[in-house]
Length: 89
Image 1 (cartoon, rainbow, N blue to C red):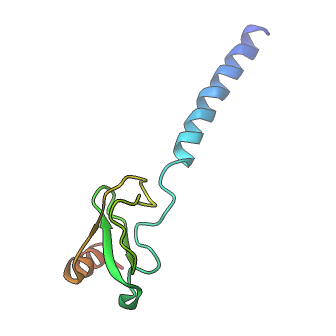
Image 2: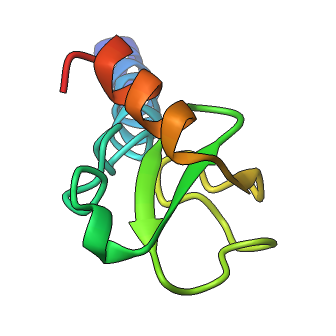
């Protein structure tokens, strides 16, 4: 391998790692599809990224689908309405 090949491989590796880190980031939307439907269950919000969702299940101790941290907290209907209004939903 000559100098040019080494530099190309080095830059490709650095850019490839950067792309993998960027793609591996946040995949879930900030507001889930069920967040607006009051019949879907109780409102939950992630205290790290602000992800909003509703479910009938107890999500305490489960991971947020957006940031993968265990920071989901049950919120009131008023807090959910305020968060949806704040996010423009």
